[in-house]
Image 1 (tube, rainbow over the protein chains, first blue to last red):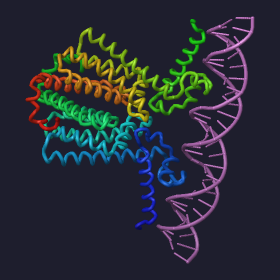
Image 2 (image 1 turned 120 degrees about the vertical axis):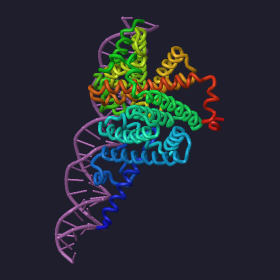
Image 3 (image 1 turned 90 degrees about the horizontal axis):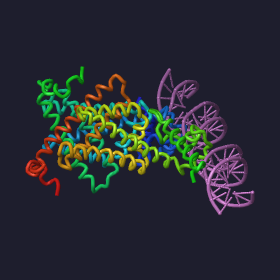
Image 4 (image 1 turned 60 degrees about the vertical axis):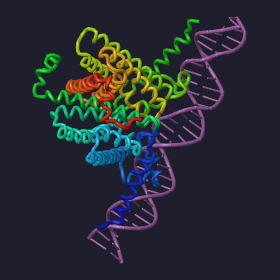
Length: 218
Length: 218
DNA sequence: TAGAATAGCGTACAAGTGTACACTGAAATA
DNA sequence: TATTTCAGTGTACACTTGTACGCTATTCTA
């Protein structure tokens, strides 16, 4: 039951996945890859592709899963560094920037398919980003003792800012990267500070905000 | 010199532009359109396309310009509403959400081509977004008397958050739109509050931050 | 060990792509 | 008015695409 066959199949499946990943670049998106190109790059006849995936879409969704894994591995890496002490924001941003430097194409895949033409892809990417956000949310809630809603809003905003910075980083000269990182760090501090201020007043928030938001929410 | 001919040419050029815009949808991106499809939709023979654009790329860049115009028109609209009084953040977010509801495909074009496979497209979109950001930056600097750097960072972060919310709005049930808007408003308030706090200390910022950032910037 | 299952191949085809080229008729120009 | 210009047409060609179908060789299973 070991499966010489199954093993070989798994191996060429990986070849297909790697072939696809390998063809991604700043000027080549997944949706612009053809089944034939991927098969060729993997050293397979076009029709053999179907032995592993019914579709390019199915391959693509697999890649998104793969990317999600890489993303979570990134979080673990960041947490390890944070435990050794230092500014959380700073370490997170630098970890993320390093991630992008060595996983540019995977990150591009996420960015592109998030606004792509397949609803399934968009959903898959958003799911991965949601995991990412929720983990950060948990952390914020615990570390900063924030109100759950405030923590979520902060996490969501922070992830948005960091992803956007990541997107900029992809088109950035290497020499400007550090400057970009510093700007991002400051922006995250704005958000953290703002969230903290609002979080402090979470009990009497209604009093604090009623003057400004009166009548806006039912 | 009036130009019956030139007039007609301009007209069918518009037909091409409108044909392209008309084919965009959640499941159809500009890069997935073919020259032939666009020409057909415009009621032209494929080869006539070349009388107006040398490339699909050239058409695409025209569309991005078009989208930039729409975006600036949006800002004007928002400013008008703001002058009539009300929360700046609230009005801006709602104006933006309305924009997306009636210009979804134009917004999708910007989102997609910002991370697309053509460097020229990415540059064009980023240019439009930069204009948008700088206008907001000016406003913040003037209205809130913020330090230039702080104002820029706030404007940049705010635009990022709003665009991201816009992207979410495109895949959102209509009933959840208001909730999304409210969340976005709160996030913008976090940023505004944080920027304000940091901005206050702009004169003695070096003292305030030197402990944390010592040695990071030359 | 005989038979079934299956990963991978090659051929073939219909559909769609960008675009080169020669042509036409109407508008612009001289 | 005679000539030139040029927006738009139709044909044609070389390519690429996804995938249906039948075959082979190897592994699995009974």
